[in-house]
Image (cartoon, rainbow, N blue to C red; front, side, top):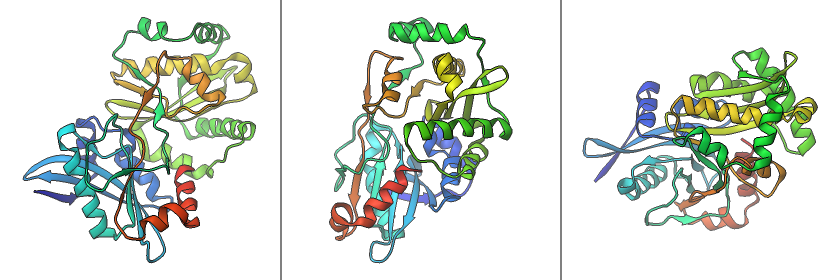
Length: 325
């Protein structure tokens, strides 16, 4: 018989997530970012007797009556293989009883999912399951050997262009990186948040955020933004300006950032999604494989779930907002 207990203390929460090898999107700081931007957040431990067997940071989006709420768990829950079915059932019961939610949506950092009552695969994907995850237990020679020849060449080329790579540690340097990101977005045609959203990530993720930038003549020309846990480095954003493109600065930036996380004894480097586009082609140059996570799973909690998931414009609007955040 499982029980659920909410956690209200950051150190207790992060200690448990980190000890269990949880994903950085399950850390307290990420929930605080979302709480500052139109989400409610609830963090729960699932117990079997007096032992914690799982944890889930729940993001709650309030919806109009009669749908009430959608509960979303990005790259969670956190649980061992043998406990996952019980943890999933406990999360669903909690979401139904506490929030009267129309559904729970999970996108766990798992390669397989156990048979669990009522859960089914959803096409409303938020985080892309097809990705590339480097095993940082490999040697640098093995990592280089798995790259394409062109990627290795461009790493060497950009390293010879007087490009300095270092960590971004001030809000002023972050603002310069955001200027690059705006140029990248305009060039590629994707939308952005307001600046405050990015500053909130910078502030609230603290030591679990990592921004690196390639500098040329003292100015950033490319940047890469990750969130990190004990086990996983996960890319959030990146971009470069015209000078960065000319210098191929993103190649040496990516490689030196991978080396940095490896030296910190992080085990996995997740490139956060592969599509059929130029950015994905760039990512694929860094490895000779791809990875597939389980994807998006829903647990309907209301008879209105079919209306919500299949035909309601509100659902599409909410899902799109989630994707954009």
